Length: 100
Image (cartoon, rainbow, N blue to C red):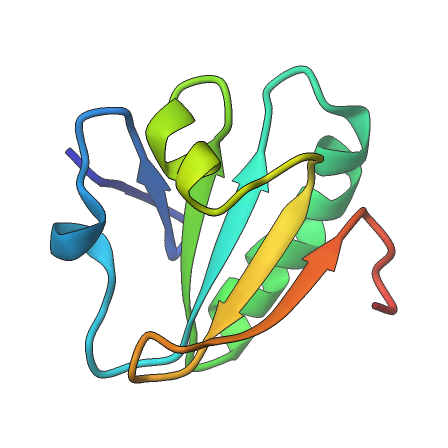
């Protein structure tokens, strides 16, 4: 079941993308891991963006959600995937560089 923490939807291994991806909004998939130092450093920026933009953020732990991680071919964390309203992938950003 999807949990909301500070406007960020935290996805678990039992969630399916069809039920969690918003149809009417742009959204960002944020791939992370609990052991990842750069992920911890960038998370305050993710929280800030989730509160100041009209975007849905989906936080996905690569160790808990292996199927989703493999589906999107995630090789490093943090990784951000940006989607348009029609679920079309627009951009991919890897790493914790805030300016990127």
